[in-house]
Length: 210
Length: 318
Image (cartoon, rainbow over all chains, first blue to last red; front, side):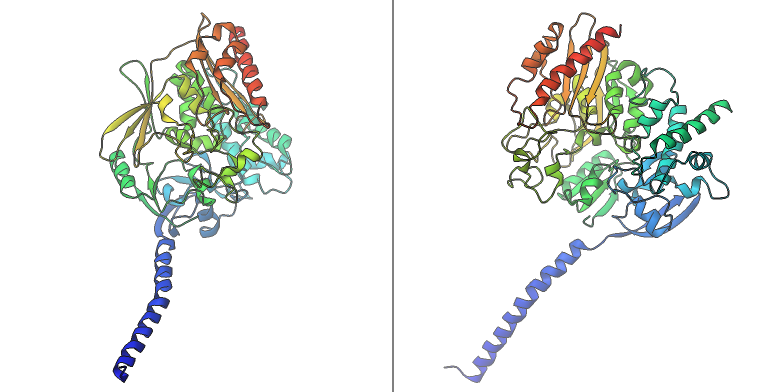
């Protein structure tokens, strides 16, 4: 016999089932959201001599921190996979692809971007040489080229060998073949390579003569 | 990229223990390969353990006259080390033949050994790949396989190991030192470190879960002429079609390891006995059992000819 009570109970069961049925996917979504949620952390970055405290998603690359959070748009996003070199910056003086490292990994380092190398009124000698020798066309790869070039000359001076060095034990010289090999991580779509090499060579020779 | 939590490990053993506790964790050092793959969601760690602060960045002499290279020594610093250049020039040459100046500044010794293949079908998440997605098949076998393996491959995988440094480490008889999650140290000869694909191409080495590389050691220098010759589609910043690392002694004996041909650095000690008889004599036992595809069978000839180039270079560099 089904009395009203029984009916109520059964109706409530139906409602419960219904609620459970809709809650189940909601739970799954909530759990999904928990695992997919961005992890935000405080990151202290020292860039071009200034220290900044940033709240960043752990996924933020150094490149994105510079461009999107510090508005330093000199370092460019070309391939975002370490193949083109447009994002090259100096970390404690060493050239690095800023797209292939996380901002959170560099809290104890000093980062230098093209903005920290020189300004329009006080240009770095490498910037002056790129202008003089027309070492670019569209200019997109140029900040990375210049940061890389500055580091290349420092590496040669420090005696770091390259694939083009015929004698691993000899002192390193800024020859054309050395500069070409050492700059191979910076791609220029416009093909300004010969002028880029002229610019770097001029700075290298000035450095040698002074 | 998927979200992940992040920690900086305090000690190597603590890093290993943390990785063992969390099956979705990965170590990060240079990050040049891992972040590349995370952006493509080929690697999807939910937790990253940053090992950069672990002071594993020293190059030291060992009591037996060899060298211990910390896991975090950057490729640039290892290639430029005065003792490496003088006593293990093959290692310098191999490192300098790889990647770009920027990448070598970040990439570490351990990370270089652990880098993943650059097989285009592994990288393309729309393609079947037993290494990326076990059991899904291998699109490379019917695809563009010019760059891929000719020997030691299987019906599951024809990927190659991309490292230049590992070729030198194999010829130099390096040993990989690790720490395990419970704190015990382990030594793995480089010959036993990388694995062939078999039917488990997603397994690429003999590390156990959580195990962290702490150093790579080299036995005392073997001398001889040491040469590394890399053949590639452009003269810089490209992966090898074929590379040959050679150590040859004044009496004509020596060692050969080959890159760009297999899932691991390829060395056949029995083939080295043929070195005094020239490249052709070495290539035959070195490449015995090769199963190239139509697209990459040229590599068999290329290995022999590259070996001939380095052997004649060794003879002329008196």
